[in-house]
Amino acid sequence: MAALSAPFLDGLARGELRYQRCADCDAPQTLARYACHRCGGTRLEWRTATGLGTVYAVTVVARAPSEEFRALAPYTLAIVELDEGPRLMGHAAPGVAIGDRVRAGYFEFGGHTLLKFASGN
Amino acid sequence: MKRAYVAGAGNTSFGRHEGRGALDLMAEAAGRALDDAGLKRSQIDGVLCGYATTLPHLMLSTLFCERFSVQPAYAHSLQLGGATGGAMLMLARELVRSGRCVNVLVVAGENRLTGQARDSSIQTLAQVGDADFEVPNGASVPAYYALLASRYMHETGLTEADLAEFAVLMRTNAARHPDAHLKEPITRASVLASKPIAAPLKLLDCCPISDGAMALVVSAEPRRAPRIAITGAGQGHRHQHLTAIANTANYGARDAARWAFEEAGLGPADIDYLAIYDSFTITLAILLEEIGFAPRGGSADRVRKGDFLPGGPLPLNTHGGLLSFGHCGVAGGMAHAVEAYRQLAGRAGDRQTGARKRAFVHADGGVMSSHVSLIFARED
View (cartoon, rainbow over the protein chains, first blue to last red):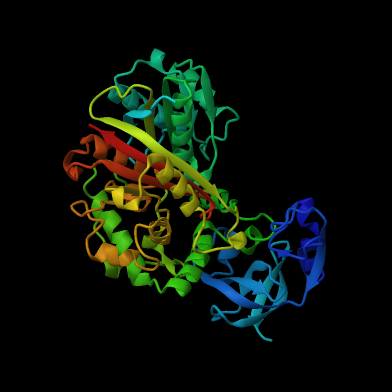
């Protein structure tokens, strides 16, 4: 685990969805960075999101990359745009489509806590 | 500034090279490029090489130089995913233009197919995803591109049947090249019926994994007629990871292309040959549209009109691209440039598409993350 992402991963383990936000310009951002993608400021804070968002992109993975994930295939992966702004990749309930409103849930797999988005407001 | 020319090219066939390592393949392609350029080993004063996932050596360039028996004044390897070949050619041009080097050998190759297990290769490649936010989900490079495709298709109306057009075109082109990996004919129907990988991408929307190598020499001397100069180059790097992509109308290709066109004093309408990276069918569609060789959502219409056929106004990847000539990593991305050079030089054999004057070459690395554009021009 990279120290930079530790707050996100610790959050997942506790069932919380955390994202970085710039304390100088208030811009939320996707992934973990050393500086704000908008203003370049380095005063970044981790906030907790509501877990609500909208499906931005979706796929169904049939050819899993490892033996471990072959047990799960086919599985749905989505990129979700959280209501707070950042985008996140996670698993999703079968059948979700771009534009669907979803809520984050969590499951344990392969030693990680992973996200699973399902329909919900 | 001096002028930089492509002075020669060489390649191995792509496919299975059982028992041969990365250096074996690189040496074969490099030897052919030197012969093609009429250069002796002692005349090579610069060497740039790619990386090989099957040979993760700390100093691949000088390891290669020792084995290949060259002692250049400038050497290193370079890593930029699928854009590595383009970036090496851009740097080779700068080395020649500045006067630092006279003859730069650019070479890459690896036994990506037979040198490792398929799962191992797929997992190595998946690491272009974010290690904490993306990879743990069981995502692979096809899954990243599938997510990218789902969004792009949603915004533009491009369909799976549209994407199938590109797979068929690349296979038809590969069938004319003696060194291509995949030549068995396919149809739009067989692409659509091929086995699902990550929706909307199916097996025939994805490039294969191959063994092979490619080499080019970039030189201050054209070496032979006609002269093929590199007249423009540019890069764009807007993100590394899929989830960080902010703008589906500019993944970075447009930035790279703008630099290259400005330097060459040309625009898309001046180009008469295309060498465009095609790791997946969606990659090719997006790049053609973003750079301006087709309207947004309209690239497949140009395929259907025959515009990109070898006999059309804008032949595209006449070697068959990554989708069918094959993909062995860095060399896979260089194959487009090698074919562009041969088409401009009038030395593409049975595949020669008439007299071509200006080629646009583009490669991307990662998940549309790093972009390099080049313009080759024939000077009669």
